[in-house]
Image 1 (tube, one colour):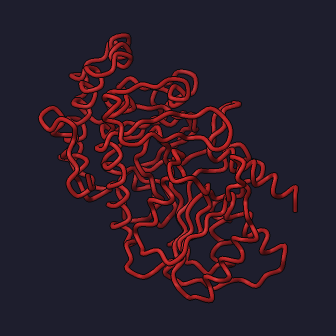
Image 2 (tube, rainbow, N blue to C red; image 1 turned 135 degrees about the vertical axis):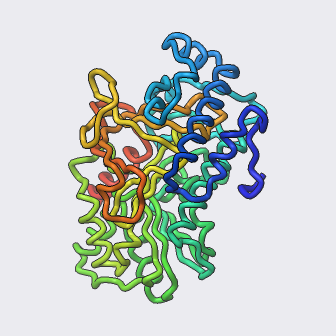
Image 3 (cartoon, rainbow, N blue to C red; image 1 turned 45 degrees about the horizontal axis):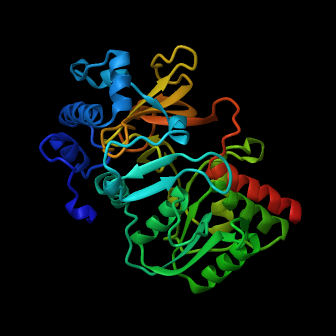
Length: 391
């Protein structure tokens, strides 16, 4: 199934889910889209209630009924599942033979979230990226070189970050691809910083656009090493694009402000600020949140976001920090239509951002608490630390 002919598993009971996810304008603001979202949420809640015993019990325990949803703010009432729940449990709302892709959220170490996708769920999330890339004008027919700050994987890899980064290569024809986290042949990876620098130098000489995807920590480390070696700044094509994701989890002491990272990328690679972007998402919630030109994560039409008090879990007003709570009806494969993350964030109205988008946006402030669980970004940051010790 291609994204051009996507169809929900049950067109009769999920008609509004289909209609909502068919919306091609990513940041539409209207009463009709709000009502469509509410109708779709009612459908997906009933879907998981009927097809997943665990979530049906959650709804019963919380005393929730879909008739409680009369306005968008009511979506905060939808019983949520903790993202960490999926690290310990496999819950499906589809049959096993309907699973199209199985992705995990961790790298070489740590507990893994096990998320299963049917064709609709996977295709719908991918099509959202299509819509957003089109909205930003990031489709290109020009041959492009790629530097992926992600894991070099086997053909059948289930690692979510590498799957995403390779998927992103479809928006511009591939000339050459270099993956920064190289397989060692022993089930591990090493960060090839000198290989990254060499490829960037080659890419400058070729003059083609360059697209850099993946973990921001490794872009920072590459630029830092270039400065240490006193290498002259590069002048990559102005049509180049940096699109990062994965955060700095586990190594906040090594992180720099993302605007400083963008400034370094602009100074050392010559890529315009408007084409330096970050993305936020997870395998538990695959809605793409992509920075606007002012570097804010505006909420697309297929999702709603709430911030919850860390003590009471009550929804918080704008500007206050709390747990990040995502709500979206797109997912039919697992009961993750309402997921609370371990990230701390705050939300703001669209009018607080000087860009043209009108939807609200959120700001991520980092992870809450301490945990031994490690995500892809944590494992990747550990590789960066090892590489620094070697140098």
